[in-house]
Length: 389
Image 1 (cartoon, rainbow, N blue to C red):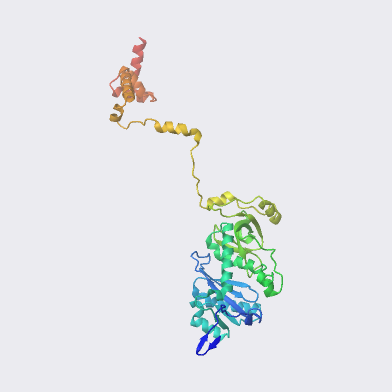
Image 2 (spheres, rainbow, N blue to C red):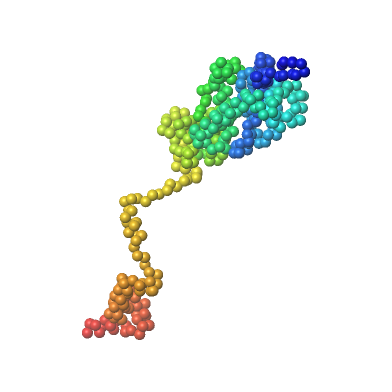
């Protein structure tokens, strides 16, 4: 700032920003960045349309929570605060957010004041001052998008994919942290990634005896949806029934996908049979047949093209003259008039006996004689006798 007489000039050659050095030096959870992601048009399987992220400035570790409405932001922050302070053992000192209504409401302000948490708000139309969460939300969104499209997973699983992406990002080395992971920066231990699997891949969950009968399948074909925070297992979902479960007895077929781009169920990969026999044994697991799954899914019938071998026959059949429906149409054709004249001449040359034999063919003797009598004709026995004479 320069003072020239009565004129005060502010030096704005460099952009001002909220300093994080003062708070960052105090360690873990001293400064928390937060922002709301959404609204997502497609609701998740739990009915969520929004996601709120909380990022530790010291370790860049991210926590994600899902909401139906923005009004739930304060409740999510209360859950996050209680969880972090119990696990990490340090209190939150400062919260940095934007100027959205979910953060500037009276209830939110009173809660921060009661818990002695300092607030830092960005300037209007200056999202770069909250760049940590802006960048992290973009990173999560792009990672989620690639994971969904890699296995053609429907958008209704976006919340599970976001949570899985956050788990993976927290355990990946980052250049801003000296190429160590946020997990290691926060907990001072190396992360374990041996349980990582491909999101959306086909998996087979072992069904316990209590949940099946003697002749039911021992493995259920599902898709992998991520990891559980409270249980040591994988989260799996059966798209046919919509039921989700957490299990540790799972065989993964990471090379295959449940859906294709045309929404048709795909078959299993060749390597799956060996994995199943190695995991459950030869006689303990009968996999769900792909044909049975296809019957349950919506089948898309392919368009059939005519065989070129029979193209000429089809043209000939189409060009044939159709049979006339009445006498006027038949009389206009020379072929039909000729056929009618020949039929009339044939009927005129037949005797009465021949006509009776034609119309009474297949009748027994009693009915035949009765029919001849009704027509006023001589009984058949007398006719035969005169013919012999």
